Length: 342
Image 1 (cartoon, rainbow, N blue to C red):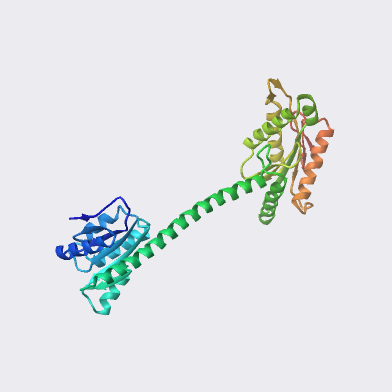
Image 2: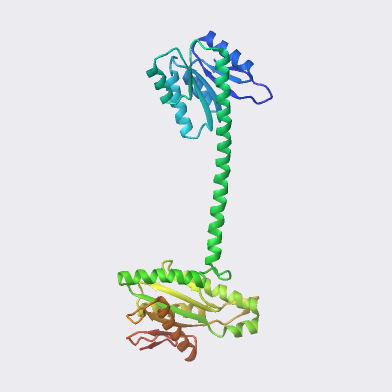
């Protein structure tokens, strides 16, 4: 059976578990008269069920009860606390036990305080008011913790966004120059440490100034975005791809030898040439010139490797553009105008 006293003004909830009807009714009257909302139950099991709908409560429980006694209820409430099912609660254990061992058992089970029978009404109410102050502080801390977690989550999202903005080229969404070189250095170090092949593909868009002059800067931006998207779809995520200049891009290919990197470069060149890019209904012919260099003993840094690839890119442009030049000991030639530099 449950005795519940409620009124429009929200009052602190007291969950009372007492199996003796007369004592239960007496405590309920005394506590209710002091301004508390009393929910009274005849055993710990029913009281525990009543607690499941509450976020905060003051609990008065008799030690000896059928089905679930006060100490067992204590342990169950502690589990609710640890699971955050109860934001705050204060557990007052009523006991006729006077031996220290018994009192220690109750406190270690999770009771916050105890009161021996027969009790004084004023002492009971004083302990409840002290418990309510503790609950209010716990509620305040809970609210602050929730707010702190919300702010921390916002800061985390902002930090990730700021990091992305700091690392990303705003136009193409690729790694910007600074972030590209950071990642390229990491890949370079890894390749050297494990003696893996490592190749660099430098490329830029042929006659890009002519694109801007003929079709406008908006069209030029569109071409940069489209070329970046086409290449990004073909470059493995393990490779490093970035925009390092106006119309200049670079791909660092981990575990790729020069011949394999050159084949990839030729495939990218052919793909862009046949893409038929258009802006506002006007087709814009776009081709790439590419230079490919593989890491060797004469490269003491990733910058040196990139510089070699850049020189090969320059030779590709000097030789008529829309072609791949690769530094290798072989003599493979890639259509329509790929060349091998020894």
